[in-house]
Length: 146
Image (cartoon, rainbow, N blue to C red; front, side):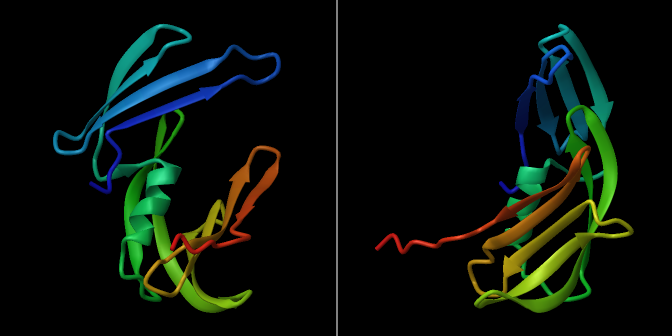
């Protein structure tokens, strides 16, 4: 399956209580069961459409036949928050030695992902907007496993 069934996130920020969150997602029933183990609170949220976290969003997009102009709609799970998101395949451009598809959040620059425009659709670069700035991840080396 290309959709998450369980997501766990743990974070300890300075001067804040720890977050230890487990989310069980039932895509068929359209329900997310959320547990904050740090506060021992449990609750459920109804899901109106396919729900992904950022990791599964990247994995899901890698498995699509990307074409410029395509728009995909999801609910994005960030900690315990769900927000509607649309990702557009904006353009094909050169990134280093690779031709890449730029996928970006519609109406915002919160998420940008460049996938190689070959059969592997490797995530070459990922930019996400976070509280203190922009977090950038870049693929720097590909090793042949053979």
